Image 1 (cartoon, rainbow, N blue to C red):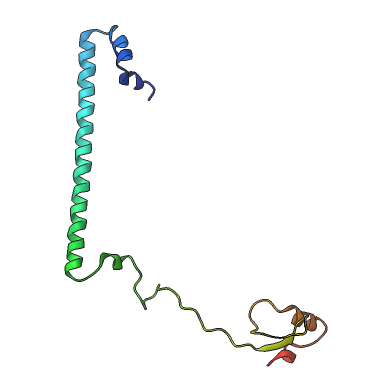
Image 2 (tube, rainbow, N blue to C red):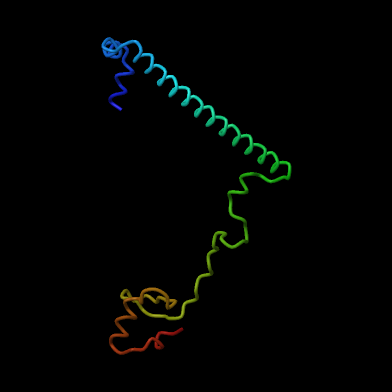
Length: 133
């Protein structure tokens, strides 16, 4: 790419061109003109494809609106279908009652980490059934 910076500076380009014959310069001009026209054609095709895509999107959007469908609804998940947001489950009922370190009555559902007071009592030989409500 650093070689192409020479082409972008007119003063440097003139200095390099002084050492070349006119036929070589005309050949370079033809090649450069070909490259530019190819690039213009590619850009024209890209813009035409983009315009075509936008026209198709607008036609689909108009068709959806004629049917009474908001295009934003297509992006949101359908309600009551699989994949919809999960609802929270009801809290579990307490199954065990114990007294904590502070002397307060507490309950435990049996899910998650065993409370410290129950774990210590189990180590001393008590059974989990002793704490059932």
